[in-house]
Image (cartoon, rainbow, N blue to C red; front, side, top):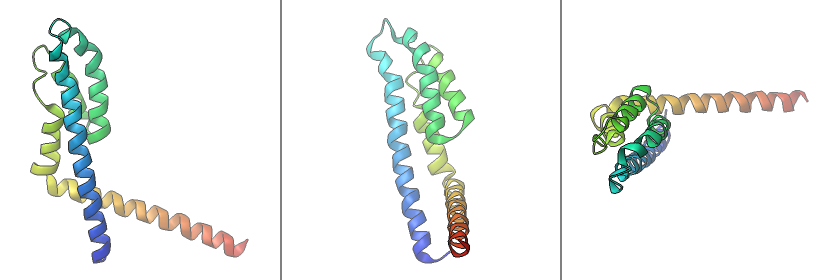
Length: 128
């Protein structure tokens, strides 16, 4: 992998990191918003919990995180815990090197698939 490819992967990783942080903060804000309606707070959590757990999974691709988010949201008076943001901290701050490595590996696999498809299509054009 040359320097420009590394720079491109690093730039895309930083974009993804920023997107995941914003998404995590938004997910936690929605989870905490139920405190705005004290009488309905815990009742609304029954509806919000599965939605937020799906969103956590969509952003972070972790079943454990999605389950933790669901449990945190469904247990009374725990809405203040910013579960999605804590998952983001774990992935990008505490475990950042592994997250970067996984991201780069996925990027390499995508490039390989694209190269294979292009080479197959070009050989069909030559034969065609």
